[in-house]
Length: 372
Image (cartoon, rainbow, N blue to C red):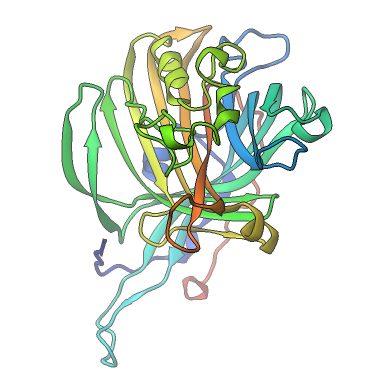
């Protein structure tokens, strides 16, 4: 990780908060095609993207039978609405060595794109089975997340990054952390995940992100033979028992790969790769979460895809795979105090809908730049 600074003074007076616009790449960079409302379904209209959201999670669970956890799978429809852009937002800094006088202003410029994510399940099953009141009824909301995605225009921190292609090629590069995701979830979690972005021709490469516990599989998506009995709940929703006949909770990437392939030829893809383990990212949780099922890390790949052939008139698609690691229960044979890491994996493919007209929230007046 390396922070590279250059002399720069940010003028504060032109900051604006207003409806986001897809036609301003100079403000939002790699995020410039996100503004608007991304959907799976819309009343009175066939989008072709209905029910493409799926997730799986392992949860602590008390039952009179043996076992101490259950695996829950949901199929869902989502609305991901990118609403307003805020910027340029200044971060103030100076070039200074120790106690010596500063030699230059080194301000940073950021544009923030706020979003609201809402998810409602349309099918659900768990193993071992619980009840409707525990797993949630059909149509129930299962996720609500307000947040920001940030386009970091300058003063970048660089990381070593391996870029992989669907053809199997790999290239190493030092990439800037030029995007970030800030999220708040009403379970009691807040997330900061730094990220890299790049655009390439063709379809994205979907990584093999397994739904099985990190330390209890070999290879990815296959239970460790020594703990097959303990992981029996996964068997109720994988292999020959896939959820809704489609979603294998042990190998969630497979359904996403198939769904992206079904979109047809893809002209180009912008990748946004967020990870709380990049640089200074992390997750902060309320005490109960830390005690019972601690969310410790998050990784997410978002792909903004321009389609060669529009689907029902829609020429853009947004796909993602996200993995939140939950730590609970002692590891088998692991170091003292080490916990099992349980993946919570979500996948989806959405299309862009027309966002409703929105009034500007703020119009900057003449301001004194020194007030920044």
